[in-house]
Image 1 (tube, helix red, strand yellow):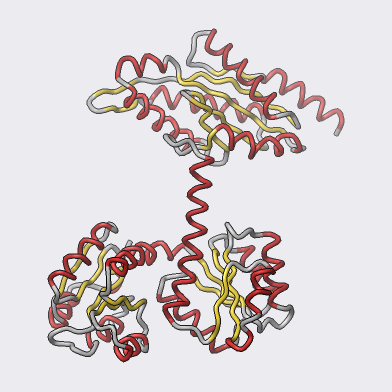
Image 2 (tube, rainbow, N blue to C red):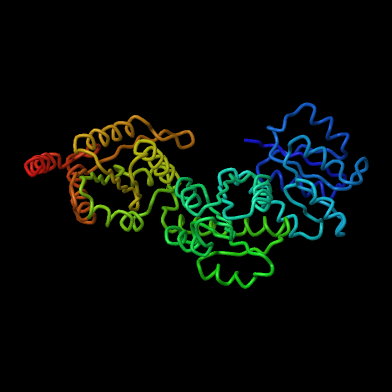
Length: 427
């Protein structure tokens, strides 16, 4: 990770604010107060060490943005901050290939800078498609997007646009124009929206100023937002960022609703909703394990509930590692459930037994204490059966494991073998 930010700023007040913002973002501030200092600092560094540079437009030895040119020539993504609010300064800054221009106007501008720092790192995992634009507009848009570290794609055909979105799950934004060679832009928007809801993919339509009434048609066809050309640098990037942040906020809320707050595993409600229809319609068998931490109440009573939480988090981490290809949920308390698709009874039993042995062999460290834990599990393998019914049957097998002395797996493998024989007869 590029964990440094070069700051070139001669105002002590502004410098203190920017350094604090950089450090709050988990980055290392490398401070220079003049262009000369910055040149000296950079002799001992490479561009790969830096996420970006934050540069004041007016410095004692570079009164007209010379420090900006130095950073751009050094291949550093450059954010310009300045106390000058006149249009000439703004135009002079934006004619350069800068990431953004931030006037020292009020507290909100520094809040914007803080968000921008986080975005520059995060944007490396986000794709944007520039589609159906004329060549000069596509080049301009792609250049601006790359300055913000987005993964950028271009398409001139509707079919190419669909394929890009389908093949690249990191894509979060499609910017559509009217220059598709094979379809109308409203059709492209409408077709994308069939498979990708607004909470998953933002579509921003672009039209000329003289055709601004088209914006309503685009929105009605399914676009999230629109942009009139010619557009300014800042508006373009603000609209991209706001649409991505909206998607991320929805994803965060969805994750909170679907996840167990302590372990991060799926919760019971989401597990049942996600898998019930799948389990009922599958032609293949699946295995389901319900497992429980043995004597967990004693852990809470002896070491406290904080220690109990650490044990639960540890167990969840082991489950994730051991069953990366399965769906795992915390059902509540110390009970977990694992859904394993397309697996034989013997394979499922082997994996659950391996998990049981692994948990026994790894005491959980809590402060200076090492807490030994074990699990019991009920395991069944079935085909085209109600998930709720399968959980109930697995729960009964878990009860048998507890009753037989804990720290063991009880499975319905005899039933599963009979099921295999029945399948073979009908094959």
